[in-house]
Length: 197
Length: 406
Image (cartoon, rainbow over all chains, first blue to last red; front, side, top):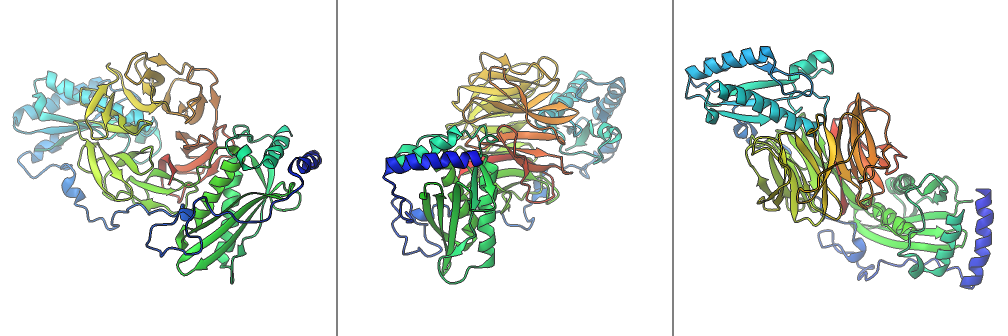
């Protein structure tokens, strides 16, 4: 820094020569084209040019959770419809890390799920694909989709009508176990089968 | 040293001489820092409220300290630059006058007066910080931009917006479901995001100043990771309506314009180049998630990363010269790479770091990190220096994205 100051002094002299040594008066220049520095606008009025940093606050939604969210959300838990015990019969399946391959266990479970579904031909289900927290959440959103699709394809191959099965991915957004260990992750890498109608 | 010589010469030449010229190398902020001192705020008239006296110098110190080219000095003496501020109130209006003085030449570099609502004091201060960078580097600061992010402070993921330094958090969504992937329009006045509020992960576009909202894409399956094109007319996003996740372009109204990828692999996380000609994205078409670059019409696909087993979430720098991304190696670390695949550089190493995005001026990268427990918001300079926590609270906060100046 000492060197810098010395250099600055040299330049200062050069500057003095170039600029004729005139240090400018300490004068505030209002922002260009500022129309009304002396007359501040009332609070509600549009800000004058010099008040450029003043902006409208973004519209915030009302704080109380009054939105009929629950009504909008797809029926998560089984409706009281005749499919009540079907929801209890449909089993989850689980996956390995970064995989949508169906294990032998998973295929057995899917076969049983297909049997239950074939007994109630009017019932529709939604397969919800989920991931553990370790991957990229962008990528996991697609991986959850692929897990749901893998189960759907298997059920369709077993004769369940494709129109009866919707799929959705929650990526890593709906863990059943909030833990951060392999036991929790293994539980979270899953497909759930939800009766919707 | 050369930089300071050059700076002083340019100052002598007057405003015309330096307004457009960039003579501080902001990409190499650790070398040749200029000493900048911040004087205590004075009163324009009457007495000075204690809060204003404290707030402005702190704000200038934070803004210009994180900026890179300056070493914030506690003493005016021996500092090349001195920032002075004065504060006054007229009724409901706050007025600040700010000056940056070159103490070597005893010359005023820039002076501004701002007036606004009392609660906009910080905004006015950030505006002057933006101006200081414009005058000294030729490129305006990004400090009056906003950062949108996803927060779980209410128990579920909602979209929030805050000042770049973590102050003034405001909630944008309040629907109790899952809200993800905020992205500002280039104007900064609109935001798109994905929400499960009607069951399916659909894409919404919200006007920030009116609160008006449209559901832009509600196709079956994913409508996710939407990003505005640089001209604001198009949105690249991930749809899974055709069987698995693919990248598409849609209009602002949601109309499908083009399908850009077409294979059985996962294709996610589109990111526009600043000229709108190319799109970086993530695909596991070769087995594991890796970065690719394609033309904006889907042609000419090239693999970008060849190192690391799991590379995700690319974002292009505003100048187009770098692509920042996250690599999974246990946890995640943030890297940046040239668009031709050269110059790969690791930027973070502490904790797990994800969701990197450049500030609109390219000086900074915002990201989320677990380094202090939980997942919070941080920023760093584009070279990885100056890593600083900006989270407004201790809740889980992720997916920061920085708007142009409001």
